[in-house]
Length: 94
Image: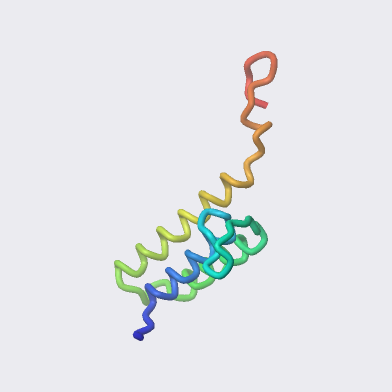
């Protein structure tokens, strides 16, 4: 088995989506949210991005950028308060 940069990024991306409850855990088959773990994985990928800046191929940089964007967007969506997007009695968003 060959280990390369894209495999590392994909491994962390799968771990992040598992922690967000978007995919089932491979061992248990259950989907469970662990936002603290998801945040940790996102932070790890961000450190990896910072430390490898300028040393990646275009496709590797895009893969890492896309993985971080997708995880961050899903994390923010999962943390959004439903009450904050509901209009109040005047029709304005709270």
